[in-house]
Amino acid sequence: MAIKLGPLGIILEQPALSIQSIHLPVSQEALDKLRIIEDWDFSAFKLDAKMLDVIGEVYLDALIIEAKRFLALSIIYKDPDWPITPSKYVDVIWHSFILDTQDYMDFCNKVYGAYLHHSPEKTASATAAKRAGPAIGHTKTLMTATFGGINPNVWGVAAHCNTAACRVIPD
Image (cartoon, rainbow, N blue to C red):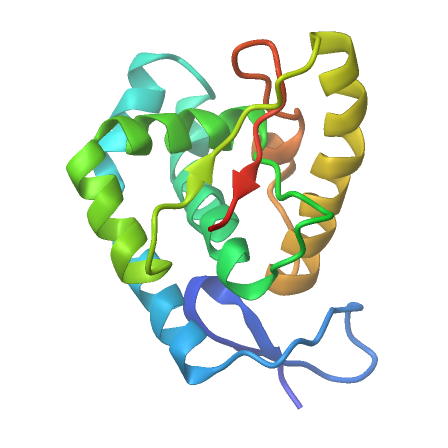
């Protein structure tokens, strides 16, 4: 049996001896939302990342895919005790997206049914950095289990915005 992939490369089925994966039931509604994310135009955010010299130009396409996959995690995993945390590079894309307020609201309404908040922790940077390590590790584990891996050039560093870790806070 071959690995069966869905939107954004989500693993739907795989051989028993393949990579270890978290198997959660993925509803048709969730798959439809993943297709919306996959098809959403992020080209302007790619230009933002290029202008800001965030990551090498060779990794820009991978960055967009990883940012979309990060946003998809909030559809698949809902655990308030374990926040989903972006990498430093994915966070730049997320910030750019949020600043395009009309497009971001339209996206959130279609994908999540509500605004997906970006909530930096309100702690000192040393404390935030300590908490970012397990949170980014958790996010990388979910990304790997869901999509079969991560791009280490995109996920190497945890995000720090306003000197604190950023995280997804679903409504």
